[in-house]
Image (cartoon, rainbow, N blue to C red; front, side, top):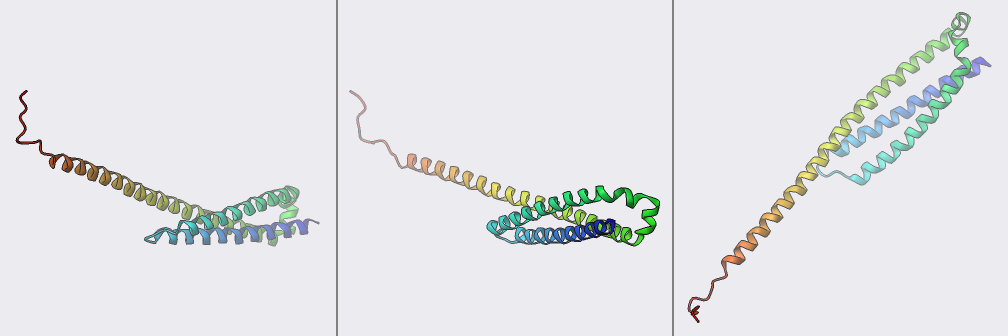
Amino acid sequence: MEKQYITILTESLQKKSEVLSQLIDNSRKQAELLKADRVDWDAFDQRTDAKSDLIKELNGLDQGFESVFSHVSELLQSPEGKKLYADQIRGLQALVTEVTDKSIELQADEARNKTAVEKRFQEYRGGIRKGRTSSRVAYGYYQNMNQMNYLPPQFLDNKK
């Protein structure tokens, strides 16, 4: 029975590794979208939605892993279990290391993407601000020019 639990743990970690790889791929594709001159925000949103689904799957895998691990943890930590399942434990440790490395890589990619998105938003805000300023200046110029064209009558007698 314990061997089945260990197999389930191994498969869960392998699936988690695959999901993390897909998340990393999506993050890198989002980074490429952000590097373009004109960002395709629809494609960016689609990637974000896909990542959301993958994160839900990842959370489910985590819950399942913790549930199964709680049944086997005492056996795997006991001296006799360590001897009996040494190869499987090393395999699990290697998978945990792989998953941890991918998680760190994903966090770094997400931090870079966040910075790039914030930079893009600042650029857009700057463009909007510049457009408003230009509009205000043009309107002021228009008003000034309209006032300059107005000449009061020169031959009108203002006396009564």
